[in-house]
Length: 192
Image 1 (cartoon, helix red, strand yellow):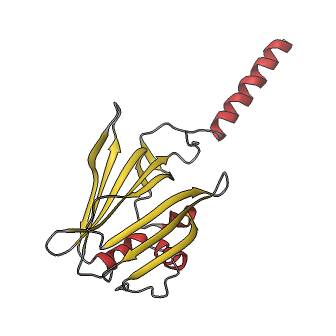
Image 2 (cartoon, rainbow, N blue to C red):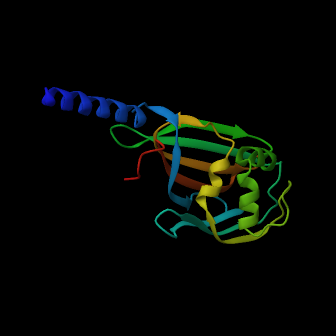
Image 3 (spheres, rainbow, N blue to C red):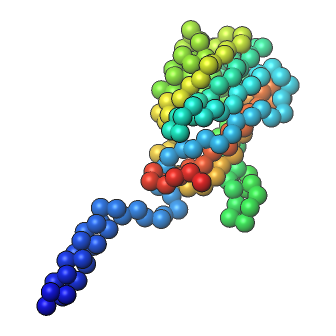
């Protein structure tokens, strides 16, 4: 009889504990961003990006470096964002997310949401409206957690992504380009 009571007690505790720790393994949902890499890609060097990620502590990763605009960052430009996802058998699969818009400065401000102001402050910018003047902007570090307030979907497919940002002029020439590699994890998952 004591063994039966212990069995019932253990079963009850394990069932009640599993309800509080339910972590579904669904393919999409709310996510946490883990930034892996940031680097420049092909461009005509009108918009130059010299940025990198630096691990400050175990929980804090910062973006450091500088950005140089040889032309004003304004609404005459076109922003071309293309996200590639890492395939289940390896290799990047392009066009998992595509966003192309004119009025680059205004739409970047909308897309970044509150992170726009955090970035302006981190890069020692004084103007928060468009157009953003030509010049070199340097940051000693911005905590990437400050970029969580993006105006992006709050639910997306989990996995590894490589997002390419291209700035084009009216003739469709690439004036600036950079890539961010990141992983979207479930909120309770740890990076590998």
